[in-house]
Image (tube, rainbow, N blue to C red; front, side, top):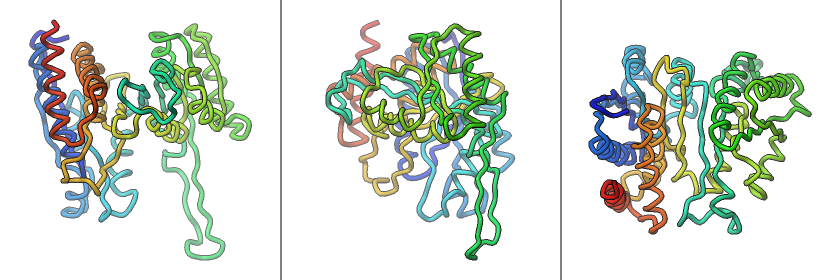
Length: 352
């Protein structure tokens, strides 16, 4: 888009290495914005473990209302050993997904030159796929409970909630994406065991494929894990439910260089509110403050953010810069990454 457009981007650095990697991503976004002719207004929000320890709140309603007014949200990482598991994750990440209706989790898995993939025989062209994960339903919807806690008959249930509307809008997004790529869409589920939800997903995928003209394939989730390792070229766009997508996307990241180079977008494709973009590596408290955080995932997440905002060329600049740095040999320090990315972006600008 460009041409004096300006975007309000909320930045939630979060915990651990989050502030370190988002700082690099912000500087990269500012650089391509200046070169591509659009503006960025950064709005910082100190959400995370420190706020929770101080106030007992994770995402105050007033802050959520402010976040709704942003064009996009760039998030660093959430998690801290001092906070009981689930408080930050459910109170911030899952709440944002529900409140902002971020019903698509987009996880590209792309093997880049210079990256030692987990399987040596894989070529770059073998691993360039996208996982589209339903992001607001399934087992992550929070339905279920525990009775007789602490006794020998304690019973815990987790219910997977799948609505036709929620399933269909996710599959339609994936089909539209597949149509812009190779035209191949693979549904991953477990229809032979999860017969109710599986049937809903399969029938809906078949209907969407018939409507859109994409070629539909199917794989059970356990078989899909095998295929991702053994023959990933069979996949281009994978669509799946919340739990399976969470697992498969981390496997895809491992195959393509690890979580440090894996981006993600939590999307509201209907654009009724901001989408959230974050690297998937977690807060890594063991290396926070050591200067060894890898900002590649954060920068690639920012690239997804710019593409979502319509600044496709700027997003391509960031993606190409990360690829150039990886091909030349990934730096061992955050400062080294920042300098290498700046040089790569300068070289990209010189070519135009």
